Image (cartoon, rainbow, N blue to C red; front, side, top):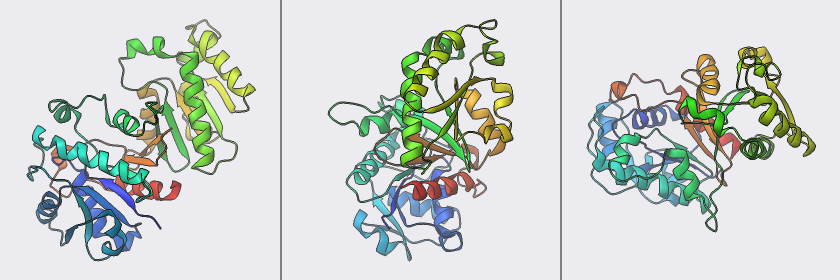
Length: 328
């Protein structure tokens, strides 16, 4: 099968540690073949720091399948990267960004089946001129066709529990103004299409949370539901999409209720992420829907305090690799 491409992420964080730890256990875990886009010398140094007897072998993407059994295949990104756990350096930004860009290009060309991205540290990238709000927006820009940037939709998943925040990294005070008829239609359209095409769910059932307590109580506790959400869901039903709601978020995420739906759409970031992190704090996966490529990522950050210690849990990265392999 076509290998996966992994990006090493922030060098001072736990992303490289997790990749190296999982590669060391590749046989017992039955991992699919993958190659890492990153700095080969740095990865070798981090492996040594972690006490892992791993050979790191720089080479071409086409060599990954042949190399994987005996050495970690790395597509080397030239740059200045020192092994300094917990101490991010803006000088590493060209390697971090270059790894993402080259990995996406390789997936688009068919050399890899999908990309699994390790966490990045946006502050270090911003200081080096990175102009995107985050990882996902950069990936969407890399996937643009004819100057049209696809709508990326962030889905958090753990087994059969999936949730999507309609709005993401914006202040809570701005959320009501960002919930529009158009955004609901576009986001749920992407979810329905990708759940069918990539997850094999022929007729996805999509639950939609309300914004206000008790989903607004028919306009008594806020009007966003009756004015915006209800009309948008009616339009989606006319288009043949099975949507349910708006539903009261205080009971929707009780797992037996949650499992009535193939995905639940929440109105804002924490409304979506608190439930998934409660049931799968170190095993959730971030999946980007709406892109022409498969992309997954562990559902955690760089965890600088754990970098280089070997104590970080690899569960989320492991789940991200397995999910990318499954849906690709």
